[in-house]
Image (cartoon, rainbow, N blue to C red; front, side):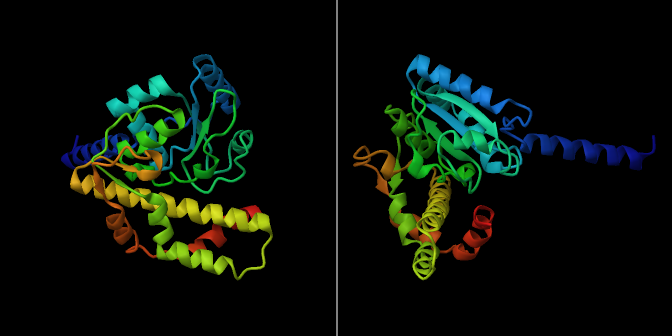
Length: 268
């Protein structure tokens, strides 16, 4: 076989292997019966008296795959999830599949992937105020993920933190978020439209704050959590809130324009 062809075959083989390695966390099965999978998880949750975590995501989304990968490969998170949760991953395609399964739990909108629904053993949604806060989870610190899930499971932290940030304060201090909220006050909208836009803005801001916290944690080699998930358990660790605010305010997307494009699907 000519050397050129051999070389091309080698390049293709290497590229294929690299792509395969990049596709970690592909657990969102488009062929699965989502209703049956969720029903099985809820039955397990009720039997063990633990909450269920339903992750609505997709294999094309690196954040969806990143969360699945961390829950599987981080030793502390994996052990925690096996004990404290019934876990199920549900494919939403291009945010156009299995939306009826989200509606079962009164989640009317999907602004990004993954969207996390924590359901108690009786089948009720626990985390309604924060289902949209995890769109950048591929950059989230494992301790941050663990603290959030431990909060809703009423369980000890699976990973002890070295630092924390008040992500609610970070999001509120983000200039694009402040601009979007101010602009919203000038619009003639129904109460429902206003509520949906606020949910979108807050979810985007909190997701971005979580991303910046994770990047800082990675750069400093520390484990970090959101203050809102741990209460007084972080008295002796570093407060990184101002660092995260400074980092996030370097990012200036037009949140109003993004919201207009995104929410048009719900308002047409």
